[in-house]
Image (cartoon, rainbow over all chains, first blue to last red; front, side, top):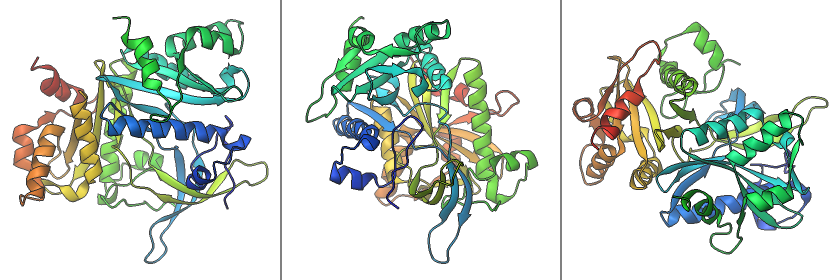
Length: 202
Length: 202
């Protein structure tokens, strides 16, 4: 009990989230989760201000066996984590569909091992249908957060398939992505970064 | 094993979905799930045709305990169903954010007991931010499907809070909602119904 479940991508989820929040225990294991907390709290702020409705999708789980203890609620006793078919977050902002995946990186690069190909394709489809699609990346060692629009992600991904780097270096993200300010309320002004990239050109 | 988990709303989910699909076992217990299958398959059709990207959200589960059997993947051994914070489906269509809840009704009315208040409020927020928000309702006894736009849902819900009916009668939905045609591909032409309501007026 209380053990953190570690995802293949190094992030942790769901289990004893509240405990984590209270202890603010900044071990390596739950950095991913802390970044998620920041996004979730920012989304609450945006929701309460009627700025945007953006939610994290539940962690997909394949349920195999459920018990029905007398007088108690159904208890799932066998289940497995499933590969997510889409991304972490989606919702509506400025009448647009918005969709993104969040990643916290310890190294100063974003490796394509951290994302599934079908998630990249999903972001590409959103982009092509006129939605806002991006990656929000935290570089935890230097405490910086950026948005990387899906067009740039896909450009780099295609390069990697054709013999290029299997990761996107920090410098590329810094120079081509949009910096996300950290603050008090919202903790991450990531919609400001979205504005800069998606709503200024028109 | 193999027992269907029954939700408070009468629908069934996740467990042995594939088996259900194959057997097409039309018992009362899995009617909700068959309706979901129809929507999911329609979404696949829309996705493959680059018409829309709409996905069902995973069933929210509170994970309490995870085991790590040697050499095997993590096994969730204690978890509980959580109240969904939003709706079943969302995505992008014609550059708009689209969001809906699906319900299969055996009776010829839609009872407000079938939906959480916070889900109604969620649909209302989407509507106010310029998104497309509705309920898609199957009346299983007469094999008819309708879209009920959130504006109408909320109107009726507010009436119910002020002493009005605690359900929306079939006749109201038939006269004010939009009929959804069933067919082969897609099985449910529900975006055609969306077009009629949301894209014709302008």
